[in-house]
Image 1: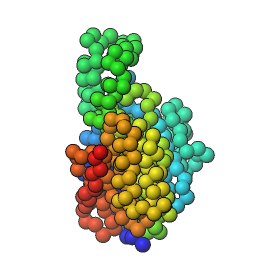
Image 2: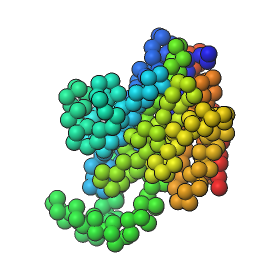
Image 3: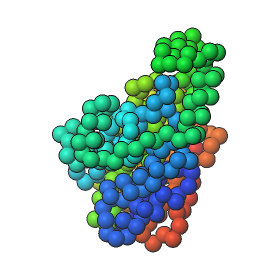
Image 4: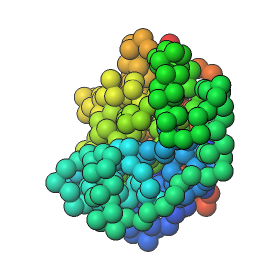
Length: 315
Ligand code: GLY
């Protein structure tokens, strides 16, 4: 069996230390990935996860998160939630106590409050500035009250929603994927995001959709996605990657095939994934040819996070 380890996506691997510490102390994969995800969620410099996430077109930060346990195949996910310091902890509570897998919006917020999840304002000067810049660009004259919202809708209509979204979605997205294997050989995977910047209110990406942006099964492996979530939803990317391994592909073959499946959708937008197999191999992959694919790795003996280069699967 592989040494306990944790991997993740982000521009630095520092956030993995919190998860590695838990694994070193004999803790579970679930506890390790939650600890590491919280580190990213509370980092205000990241504008696509938790604190500092870029808001939707109404200026509201709506967060998506999910978590899955590879031993039990239990999962918890929340979509479009506002006002929680650590969205991943609300998803974890869904996994632990709810008879459901996915809660969204007001119901998810009610549930999170009832569970005592920590509340918090996730806006920062930077997230407010980006939104203001959008408004300045979107509207020649911004009415100074709540009535401005219909003007934004009108803007979106005039600009052609689809074209507008295609422009924004690939430049302004980001998500954190974290997965781990513990000393019992159990795996778990977590995803957290504020979704595409300036998204339409109520839009859910792949991150809270189990099977699309996140999937984990001790018997075969785990996979999670970043990139334009609509593509991973349509291709069921995370579950499919694990299923390809179940049906005999290697980790690399499965990741590459999932990226080809995204190309087959013939829709603009990039997709990336990270994945592990039950032997403890790790990989990252991207549909893009112009950007390095990488992930960060730490096992219980690592002093520092190791940057592992993945594969590019351009069209
Ligand atoms: N992959 C994150 C999102 O599309 O929201």
